[in-house]
Amino acid sequence: MKTELSEQHLLAQIDLDRLPQHIAIIMDGNGRWAKRRHLPRIAGHRAGIRAVRQAVEACARLGVPYLTLYAFSLENWKRPHTEIKLLMSLLQEYLKKEIRELNKQNIRLGVIGRIHELPPPVQKDLENALEKTRENSGLRLTLALNYGARAEMVDAWRALAENIKGNGAVEIDEAAIGRHLYTQGMPDPDLLIRTSGEMRVSNFLLWQIAYAEIWLTETLWPDFTQNDLFQAIIDFQKRERRYGGLGLG
Image 1: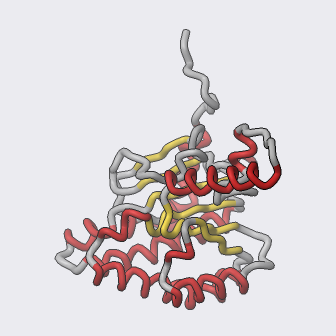
Image 2: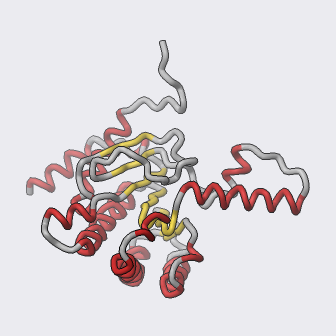
Image 3: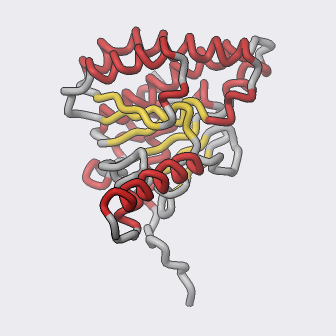
């Protein structure tokens, strides 16, 4: 009952006409969550899936148009082979189990990153999930997989260079670069959430978060709930967005 009252109290503070259009989340703390409980790291990753469901359901419930989750970075390949193998298995498990729920909530799945470098079975399950949710018109849930922002910029500039090579002179400006990023067609995040108390952006959407509001929490990702997301949105709506202004004077 206490949790329900708390949830209703938070929901009453949210202005549905001023929701962030794109929320991006750096999901951090799975390993520490497991370590504190004397569990293997994979137990933390599995618990993190529950938090993913909470965040996705909360955004769909409120009507947030875009949610992007940092699921697997290029740097994650440095982890032990056994952990990587288990992470890929968890990802496949999530993709297979969640399609029905995503369709039920009218959620369209997307993916960004160097997907062609993922194991073929993972690529196959991703393609299947993307195809089966393609017609959904609600929340756009994007998973950043095998993703790094610097790699994204390298890929964008390579594509732009190929475009110039094939078409001659092409105007290079912010809009042109934006059209060659993985996130083309999506609005830039206006709210970036990071869990576990870390204060860095970890090579995530560096171009796109230029003017995003950043919300940090000490909560480890597996403990992140819908109420945490509601609180982040409430704090976001209280801020005066300056879009680059330094507030001097």
